[in-house]
Length: 72
Image 1 (cartoon, rainbow, N blue to C red):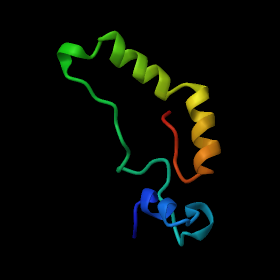
Image 2 (image 1 turned 90 degrees about the vertical axis):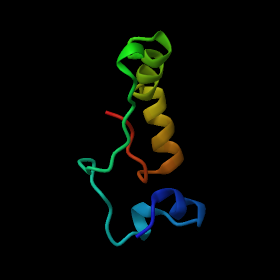
Image 3 (image 1 turned 45 degrees about the vertical axis):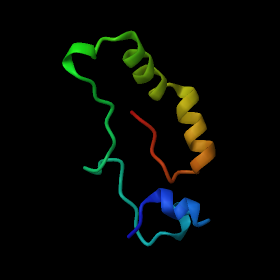
Image 4 (image 1 turned 180 degrees about the vertical axis):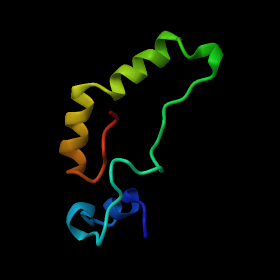
């Protein structure tokens, strides 16, 4: 078992070379979190918006060809 970043660095294509892949419902997802005192900071909100944007989703799809699942 290896993380996608190591597989990608080694020239592997997780989507086709892996024996199995975690699904979108994996408990090991990354979260964007903030302290309660800055959760409404415009910079944090801008990052959250960008991570969910179609442009970022399209970039991830192009760059990682299904090996990385974009934010919902």
